[in-house]
Length: 325
Image 1 (cartoon, rainbow, N blue to C red):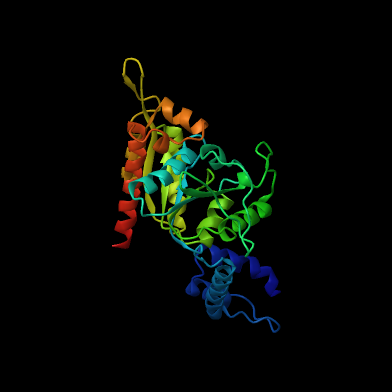
Image 2 (spheres, rainbow, N blue to C red; image 1 turned 120 degrees about the vertical axis):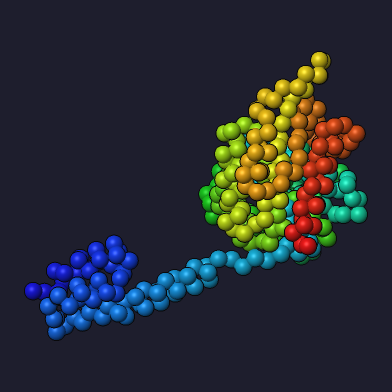
């Protein structure tokens, strides 16, 4: 009988019994000898391991090597599992809070949300970046924070209808073709979700830590957890969670209402074994000042809302210091 009639049986044993040498040997012994095909089952396991090692090495060669951004000491990414939880507002006020807490530190802000850039509006910036002699883009500056965003490179109302390769090219330019000068911290406003942009950034540059923003609502917490787990898989430290829109206080009677639930992000932080970096209330002034391009940390520095963001910034610095100890 031809050997090929038994080849399927070998495959069944190989995959169902974990390539057991003894079992496969017994199958081999009961097969007729074929003069043209010699079954060498003992060497098959070694060949499989060699193939797996070659595949691993090939995949490792395909991954980009992390290269620091010139002049930047530490990169902090601000992320969320889903949109609409106040991630960009948190990123802007975090950058301003870091600067306000320690004026000797230089802080930059990178808007990596290619499809929905918010930094130009939040930081009240318009115009196109100038180019240096080395053909690098100069960030636009307001409130002492140098900023770069795809929103500076396209019309304000123009949709960005790009496929993945074009988006990756744009991210590469925002990372490598900007003259940041010397920065102690670069805060990166990440797009929502766990897609190509997030992976590209985490694989291309060393990241000091990630800040996850979420509301206390269960549906937002599900995606926040996915975001935290993604960073762990790519070996990016999760500095902690920010519980945004944690409570609403009526401006007339001062009654407090937990519109999106209470302590959801705190419970998730405990589950994940990470810190809660702070609570930011749902307040009219945060929305109004953000829409005007006057973030609350600079427009109302003595307000409880601004203090909440500065507390988050302090917690981020503490977590970064703890990682280096």
